[in-house]
Image (cartoon, rainbow, N blue to C red):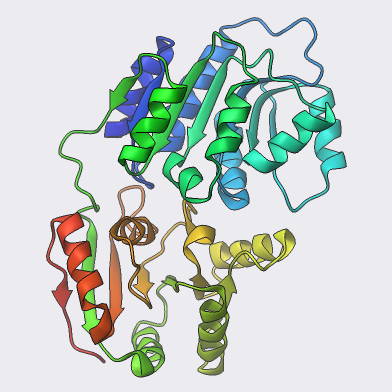
Length: 352
C-alpha cells in the first residue's frame, strides 16, 4: 500500500508534470520520486551516444543522504537493468569520472561535486530528462541555491523537475517558481508537523547537569538505539567522550570527520555495535537508520523546523519512537516556539 505522499506524487510524476511535494522524512518520499522516475526511464529509449550522460539526476544536500538515496534507488532497480552512479565530495573524482564516462541512467550527486564534473567535462546534462531536488529546504540552508540554479541551467529546456522538501517556507516557494513549470503541488492531507507516533517529552534541567541526566536515562534503557543532537561539532565531540567515559558506546558524527570515518560510524550505528550517535544537524539530516528508539535534543534547537527534522529520525516507516528534550531555563522560549510550530504540547517528565 502506498504512503500518502506516494499516492499523491506518483501519478503526476508519471504524467510528466513538474511536482512540488511536502514530505517529511520517514514517509516514503524516496520511493515517491524514484519509482515513477525508474518507470519512465524504462519506457524511454536509451540515447545512441550515452558517453558522459545522465538520463536522470537526483541532487542531495549531503554525502550521507546521497549515499542513502542511491542505496534505495539501487534496490528499486535491482532487476531493471538500469545503472545508478554516485558523485559526491570527500572521495577521489577519478573513479567517479570513469563511471560517468560510460554514461549512467540515474546519477545521485551533491551540487559541488556535480559542478566539478561539469567543469572537468566528464559529465554532460544535455540528455538529462528529469531533475530531482531532494531535501530542497536543506539545500537552501547550506547555501546551495546558486549551485542548483547553475546546474538547472545546463539541462535541456524540456525536462521534468521534482522538488521534495520537508518544509514549505516562502524561500522554498520562491525557488520552486524559478525552477518548476506549472507544478503540481502535493501536500498530504491532515499531515501533522510531527508524526503522531512520536512521544514527545521534555526534562527541565540546568545545562551543567544535562550530561549526567543523559547518562542516567541511557543506563535505564540500555538496549535503545539513540540519536543525540548538539548544536556544534565541539559539543558533539565533548558529549561523545563523556558518554564513552560513562560506559555508553557513543561516537560523534559531524563535518570535521573524513568521508571514510563518517561511513564507518554510520555503519557501526546501523549494525548496533554503536549504542548512541551524537550528531550535528547537518550530518544527521535525512539519515535513515532502522529502529532508532530515542532521539535526544541535548540542546534545544534555535529553529522549530530543526526540531522537526531531528525527531524525524525516530518513528520511521510506521514505527513508534520517543523524542526527549533536555531544556535549560534559558531555552524555555525556544521550547515554546517549537510547541507553536508543532501545534502540540510537549509532556514534562521528571529527571531520573
